[in-house]
Amino acid sequence: MLSTTIIDGKETSRKTLQSLAEDIEQLKRQGHTPGLAVVLVGEDPASRVYVNSKVKACEELGIYSQKWTLPTETTQEDLVKLIRQLNADERIHGILVQSPPPRHIDEQAVILNIDPRKDVDGFHPVNVAKLVLEDPTGFVPCTPLGCMELLRSYGISPQGKHAVVIGRSMIVGKPMAHLLMSRQANATVTIAHSRTADLPALCRTADILVAAVGRPGLVTADFIKPGAVVLDVGINRVEDPTRPRGYRIVGDVDYGSVQPLCSAITPVPGGVGPMTIAMLMSNTVKACKLACGM
Ligand code: GUN
Image (spheres, rainbow, N blue to C red):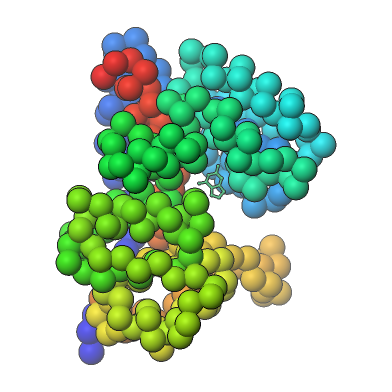
């Protein structure tokens, strides 16, 4: 029976934040305080929680932050006006518009208005291109960056491994695939999605399996090559009347059946999730350093 490493995202995030705190101290001594603006449009309860935890992380680290909570009926024009104001604000090095916005907002058009140098989410086409070009001055989306940091932190090298990424989103699947195939990581990468034929058989060829589709429990034991490393990016609310809130959070992986087969796995919660915020802080510090010519 193989023993499974449970990848502790909370602890890894704590260490990352600790090392960032030292960077921030040093920046402040030189007269620079990193600043992040977080914009939430509408009432989505999950988005509200994420936005609050991002602002709280800034406060704990000594990053200057602005939280903009705009009503659901905010127009595209007013949102873009705010973005332009933040682009011009020298205290702000990073701008994040929480996704998904209400339906009448054209998210891509909003992203195009963010100064790419302040796009700490890595969603602007300039930063997408820099990721593909492996240009280190770009910003990489926080969740896949957090996954790579977990692998690095646990000494798991993707080199020569077959990595299968389930999901082709711009936030996770696509950037994750690029990071894994980069000249830093050197994995061989397959991207799977909703139309992939015989997904379980494909996933059984994965040494590293990344699940990023938002389907609770999609990945079951029959997807797993024994000894594989499994990164579960899913954050799904499922009804649970035994919980005070009436729901609990589960990943895309059926943890109970999969965990005993893997060499390492991220739990949900406490795996990839905490790393996303740590990487947002890291990108904000990077944006500040670049703005100061460092
Ligand atoms: N919604 C879910 N993940 C993210 C993220 O990384 N950034 C933003 N802005 N919105 C999100």
